[in-house]
Image 1 (tube, rainbow, N blue to C red):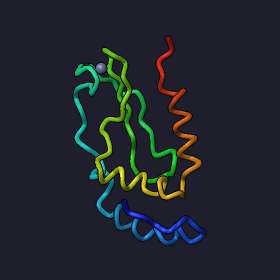
Image 2 (cartoon, rainbow, N blue to C red):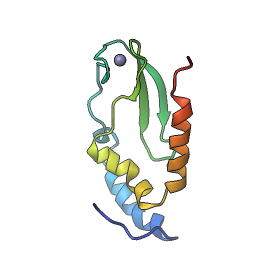
Image 3 (tube, rainbow, N blue to C red):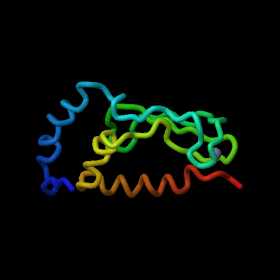
Length: 116
Ligand SMILES: [Zn+2]
């Protein structure tokens, strides 16, 4: 568990150099290989449902959601690897984006459910 001192006015300025270092190699290294099968049912009929930039923190990179045409499971594809998870979420868990994180979870609850 890495700990960062509580977020204050200087937190962003303190973190910025680390972000620039992380991004020097691009964002592809934060992603696992793209899946060709549904993680739930193993179906291969995947359809891109949404392609979006990081709407929460406006960090660089693109997120793609695929939907399985067999069981209608929607999932991020490719997923973030552990390095990517650390990059995109460390501040949220450290407190910088706590409120927005909660808002995102709420949006996801209503946003990705299939009608009917
Ligand atoms: Zn499926």
